[in-house]
Image 1 (cartoon, rainbow, N blue to C red):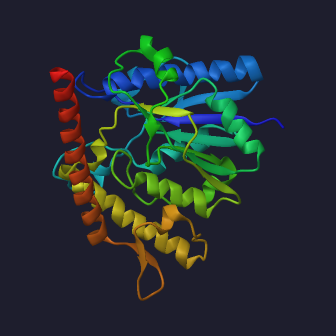
Image 2 (cartoon, rainbow, N blue to C red):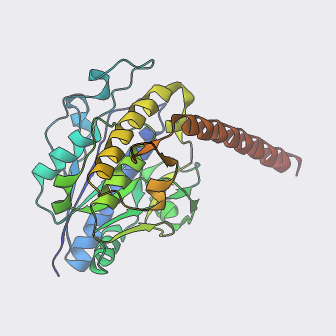
Length: 304
């Protein structure tokens, strides 16, 4: 069966102090390597796309098809304590949908690199009968700093990561997706994407253990409590999306959706803000524990 695959990311210009200054070039290169491998070895039709603001257009690498420049960000909708020009996921995927006629669409965060056999594996999963799926990344050492080290990154098995940042879905299902004004770069966007995939798929699978994508380090900057108002924005949009699917009787039972949700008096699900605040507090405690662990490990190495 002939399958056309298209993959989009949202690149943007960053300062050298940003983690993305290192991560983005690695993402670009690994996507192109995987595309070349899929085409040359398996005759698989894979196209790479970008959705970008005008000011970021110059960093889109050769070989990526630019969609229409993004025009709006979440800052056009409301006030936030810290100004971050975060795109709306709907704007990115709408442009993607109108630009390509590929059978299957892939969206990943711009700091997610892929293995050389990534697109070939995607085709194999599709051929097994799955029309939507999420692939969890592996977290590799934060010591990698350059494109030249990519072969070593491929060889680094890394560790499992619980978050969702790679989404594959059938193009024909996209017209039924609901995103509201949810923005990327903030917490809950993975859950929002996942909910849409699950509720509109005939056969969804959550792949937690495949070594197909990776991320350098595990900073989880989106959990920064100073950006809590962005989380609350996505929380409000998530509630609307879940209420819509519940009302339309399309809300499906799945751990990704059920996690953190309870029913209100109308029978709709909603995301508990109090529960989220508790989870945020727990994540901060875990972050402190991780820092302490790293300090102990370094002290042990020094003493040794």
